[in-house]
Image (cartoon, rainbow, N blue to C red; front, side, top):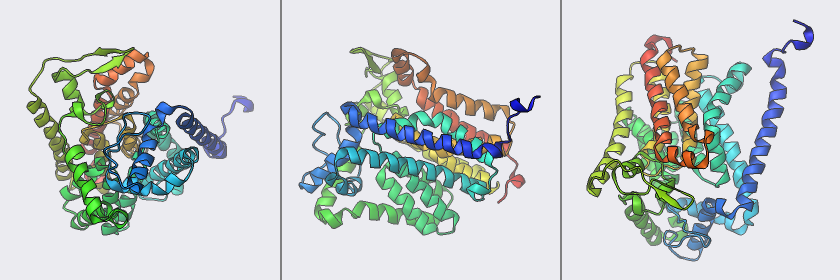
Length: 428
């Protein structure tokens, strides 16, 4: 082959790829920030946090009043609203850019750190081609959700980074500190609770105790500003009216953006509108069942998710660390969106550690099991299935459960990999 057509070795192109990656990151920050700034409809989530912070400053209940531009309510524990108080003194356009930059940095740090943890070595000691391949193919199925997250000013990436920070402390044998970080992650958004279930199932008392301390600190910390009584009042409202509220048709998150398994039950087995298009409602009702049955089924899903983690911990407890520890943690991340009674598209950024894990198993460990590979590819396809069609079919497929099924297949791939890897080959 003529010299002109020879492709240089990958190592010689790393600097070029770094430049491309830096340009891509800047473009993503610009596009996401521009969407938040220019489109009022795309700004509600970031505005919800700022609005809740302003309500707290005024001495009002942050859960009772929606943002002025719409019907979006604050639905998180008081801590996040209190932490956003400093941002209320900054022009919102600057807050938008700062928030986008912070989240991009956190997603990069989380990827690097989790990959180091499962690989057992420093990120830059991993061969360049391997780390670029693993990170690229882990980002590929999740990029749509990361951009959606950035474009709506969400907080899931902060929660993800706190959870990964906790795992990093745990890996350094600072187990209580790691648990505290995971506890703060749960206070930020309760959907990271599967990590607590995982450590409890493994019988790790020190991490579980740290998680309890982190939860307690995160819930009580706002009392330093609010006072104990006011903070308790807000927590009581949050628990009774948001966490424990059972009918998904009447909560403060609209059903048309709820993609959870529990929401699918309502779409398939009640007279709930599955989705809307061009002002017209569409239904996917197979047959109707009593509301009490749907409530019970929703609770059973939560129990099944917890039971799946406990089952993995028990079944693969004697395998090497890659399977028995990191496989279980990857499974916890993959199950987080299914654990929540409300799952929106931006929640799926939490799948990033799980995809790093399965791509590592595929590319670095070279697991050649066909079922495992079919499950990984099928999950990637289903999670991005709706982008290939027009608006009507995209909404129909989303309402039909494509996202939830994609998450289930990813979780199944982790289980399949654990079953096919030999115990003595991957001890760390």
